[in-house]
Length: 123
Image (cartoon, rainbow, N blue to C red; front, side, top):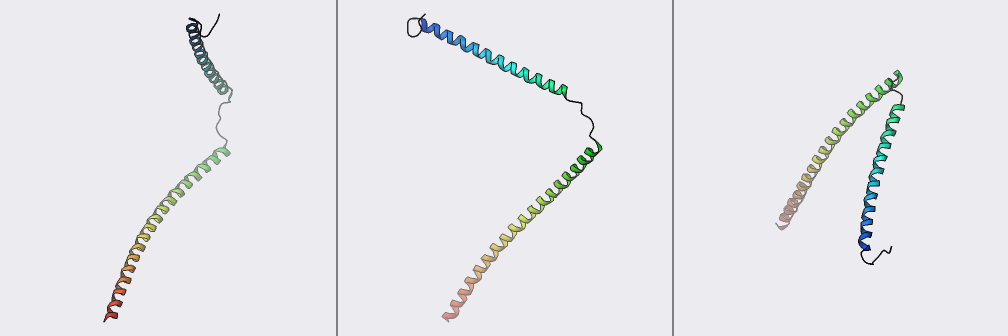
């Protein structure tokens, strides 16, 4: 059978290609389903092979309790640090504003002094 540009065989080729695409799609879906099933089976087998969880030893429980207490202390210290940081930022902003005000007052005083010196020199 000749394929290509001869007669009506082009339509048959397109049909064949479409059928192959459908088969590839079906195979892909089947592969994905099989992969999912395999993963689920592996998880099931792993969970069945794990020994039951027992209560922690007194040493482990004590260490865990100490670690939790340390975490609480560190969180409290962090909260205090954040509050102090916020207060320092407010103080810094206030100091900047006061500095600007003092600079403006100084500039005004220099202008007044120059004006007074000019009046004294003129008289």
